[in-house]
Length: 86
Image (tube, rainbow, N blue to C red; front, side, top):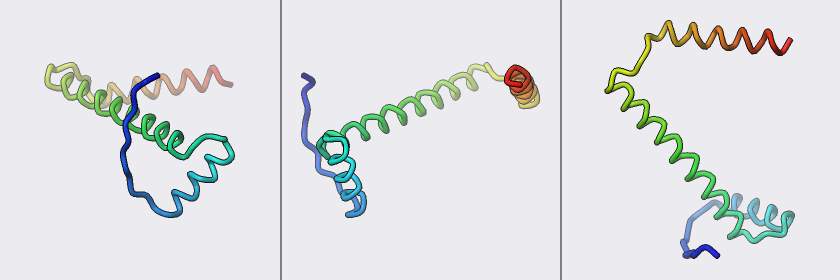
């Protein structure tokens, strides 16, 4: 079992009630659901930050392409996907 710790947070009464309804429907505790939601949020945000940091490093290293070229590549990919979907 993974070690855990306790943390107190503030939330609106409305959110607490919604969390309670979800807990009751899913037969999970509010604490479990809050921890799951917080973990998903933190993981997603850290992935976004890492991507931005990689982009900044690429920019500083000169690993970039002109905007028009990027848009042309995107337009071509969209056109190919649309053609395959039809």
